[in-house]
Length: 434
Ligand SMILES: Cc1cc2nc3c(=O)[nH]c(=O)nc-3n(C[C@H](O)[C@H](O)[C@H](O)COP(=O)(O)OP(=O)(O)OC[C@H]3O[C@@H](n4cnc5c(N)ncnc54)[C@H](O)[C@@H]3O)c2cc1C
Image (cartoon, rainbow, N blue to C red; front, side):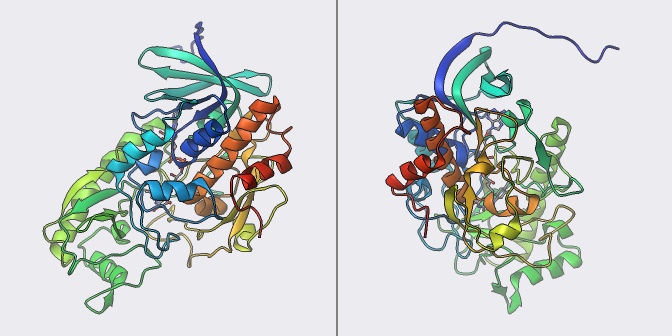
């Protein structure tokens, strides 16, 4: 049987924009709005029927990490009604996902932005090494959106991959962090119900460290070992918990043959966990699931290699760069074990607030293209820190501003004067130095 066919089709060029942003997660929405506020005409393309990426469809919260003052991250945290305590991971509270769907739709509803929902990027239009636009597919069929600059904020680096950029996945053996389906429960008795925000949390239950309690019960056969890291975040509503505990290893979510199997297993794990909560967690006897991710949560897939590849070692030492565009990014190197349960490394690595340079956002060998969000250029360990949502928002804003400037000055990302970009960011009130 023939397993390859030639396929040729004429496609309508629907519109031409200054900036085309693929993906509407924390990075994509900030890139689109930043570019629009600079006066650029923007297309925002999203495969799901809702904007927000992991902030909405993925049911991922709390918004973790920190960046320097004055970025869109501060605006979004306020917009989503998240209490302003320590968002680096000490007391993080998950935002309200249903309200986020509304607030983020309003956020991108800017006169300069055309939002294409339920529209999937399926290919790129290139002239030599320069990207000229995207082939997208929606209910009405495939069509083309041209742009002077394209921003790949798909998380998976789909646009960069389709454009032929060099991509890496996972650590040296190719294994990536596990996938997880987050879910929300209600009906927790706040007078008894424990909160546990993760491996750094020493909260106790009946005199025993809560995570040790779960591990002990797991050894006694009450919970599968890989579900023993039970993370129970508070939400903005009393009696609710955001559960970040299910996990499946060995999954590559860029492979279609992996997706359904992983999703099914994760959804079945919700039932196992609920049973465990009812039986073994005081205050959780009557809890029930009220919502879960519309889609499997993907921590790690492609990293698009750029003109600079940042490492966790540089980040841990609080690196500074002349071409900084995200300043004082702060989060631990948080590697969920690609091979089993818990953390991948013996201990969590703390990072001094670090900078991200412009060159991490320009994919090697492709012109006219930026990356933003978790697919930027870094190592597997570096990615485990900068992937959190606060940092992705600041990346999106910086790159969206840069893309608008390229369109305005009729230049490519590599021709853009980074000093001028930095001045533009500083003039908006964004801290870049100090
Ligand atoms: C289970 C889990 C728990 C996590 N916990 C936290 C946490 O507590 N706090 C925190 O801050 N971070 C957390 N993270 C990390 C964080 O959520 C992500 O790294 C972050 O959302 C990445 O942002 P992004 O904008 O790059 O990508 P995403 O949020 O993934 O958004 C990408 C968007 O692009 C769209 N897209 C993809 N392909 C296409 C295509 N071909 N065409 C059109 N659109 C496309 C997607 O539908 C999506 O909307 C967690 C991640 C997971 C998976």
